[in-house]
Length: 312
Image (cartoon, rainbow, N blue to C red; front, side, top):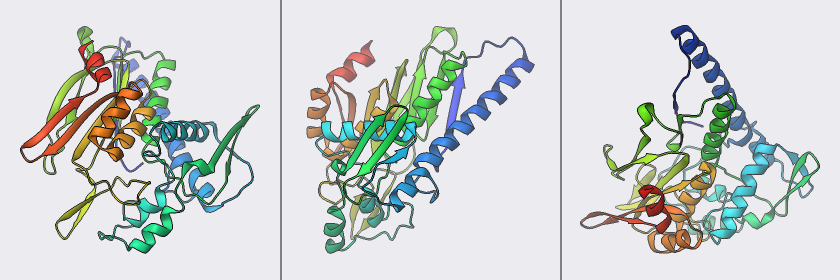
């Protein structure tokens, strides 16, 4: 996935030797699961399940893995609820703007190219079905699917369930900035995480908050972008227009019991901006935290659900 992961947990092992064995076993399990998800959903691996699907367009039903099916189902749900702001078929535009697997040119594409590829965007062309034990997909039109805005969150969910299956109830998992925390830290203290201030240079915490039995994902415009003629172009592409977002929303974080859903919704809210994003968050009872860039610095806005969860 081109990133790092970190996992902390409270062990019940009573000896150093047992702890070493537990750590070794857990690492092997985690690495295998991450490799499997990457092999299913990566656009950087030309032989991944998703890449092969993108390379071999077909209007016939094709069998896909359960993991890929679940992620695509969640993607379509958020696509509908966000009125198209979240769209996993925006990949051609992401690549055109230089934010995909290919090397970035760091320049604005031609308007004609943007218009042409915009016609190839739209999740309504993805049909999914489950038949007995089989999961299937059919594309009604040529599409290039990119799951980079939800796959990391899904990986965190998978790892969390795996730790629980191995009897570990108190843990914190982070994959590329997407996080889930369960139970408590030592001495009945909650896990605590920081939401980063969206500065271009350096790292600092905007807020530090407890996190338990919840996931969090953050999307922002301050790490991956290029500038041309003094104008910043963010990596977040609006699939409805074909262009990077242009508002002053610097970052948005979403709390959710599914990190995959938090991941997708953080992207959707980033696309629409702070005002429309807050309206969507309230409509769908999302716990969302917005950081807006102003001439005087940063302003913070919290949805009602975010206030409720963080006060609890």
